[in-house]
Image 1 (cartoon, helix red, strand yellow):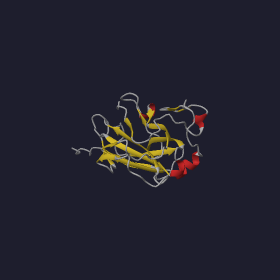
Image 2: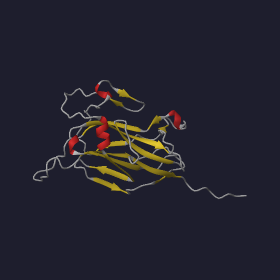
Image 3: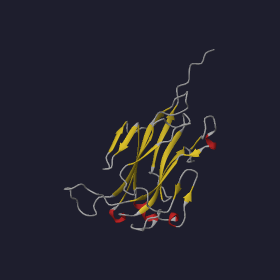
Image 4: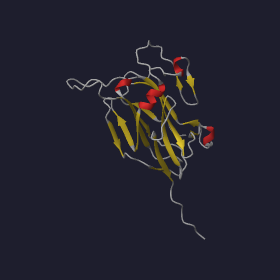
Amino acid sequence: MAAPCTLVPAYSRSNWGARRVRAVQRRSVRDDSFVFYPSPLRRCCTFVSVSEVSDAATVRLLLADYAVADVGGKLNAIGGGLVLLGINAMSGLTAGFALFVQVGVPPKFYNGECSVEILLEDASGGLVEIPLAPGLPQQSGQAVRIGQAVRFEPPRLPLPVSAPPSYLPARAGWALNFATGLPLIPGQGYAWRVKIDDATKDDWVERFVVVGAPAGPVIG
């Protein structure tokens, strides 16, 4: 069974206490792989229409051999632009890889809140499921999904740096390292997709192909 990925918060200052704007304000929302809970904190944020946030958001995705982002928002990546992912025929696991996701919103959405989902789809658009134990079919496993409630705080620049007020976008980012790979099928195409408040766009995806070992020679 593949080890779980490492989720590294990059430079969102939400620190995971924010409320989901829509359903989470009234109840917890659960699916097969994660739970959103209402925040016990007092309201301190700007609540906007969920459709406004998703419509205005800019999403960037990058596949690499390795990636890490610091609290200042700088991304350090090795082997960025990965589109072909090898697989170990003995273990059935892909090579290790990393996914970096960045979501930005214009200044008018400073302190706005939303939910962000990062999920893995197959070539037909269905959710990819990872077997819960070796030897079990993928359909018996758990969907590869990561969910997070996010609050977009205004950028905080180090002194004595100054910038025009309400000029830079607010951003949140994640670096996910799958150090041991995932049990995917060679010869198949996959895509990482981002959803914001359950909405997505055609360009909020990063596609890749799992490359299997070449077939051996035919004898006889």
